[in-house]
Image (cartoon, rainbow, N blue to C red; front, side, top):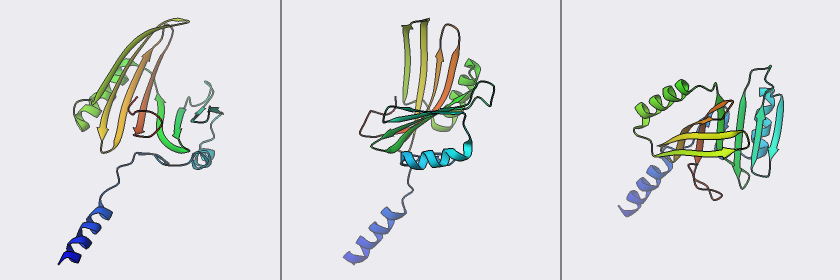
Length: 162
């Protein structure tokens, strides 16, 4: 009887769903080499390593305008940011959709600062889905704006979400 209970518990633990974000062919836990290999089929115009822990890939303005940021911790993918067409109304649509799916945001980050070109304003919202954090970030600069979707997991290098 005791063995049967242990076997059932072990089976239940093995069959629990693994919560892990996956966007296209990119998923948390991939190594940097696996991400770089997967990126080959995307044909980005530029790929720039950002220190040892990030990789920024993008297209020139004349091309599709895609921009991805991959963040690694101990050579494992822990965050992925994808820029989308920047407009505050797009921010509202994404935030509304996430709120309908996942409830109230877990964390909201309003931030204002001054950069060389003037004032910079950020509004970021994060929701939790299992062990994942999904977020939307809107940044307003003096002459431009930026909107990105982000997927993150807890890691040993920095506290998620950020």
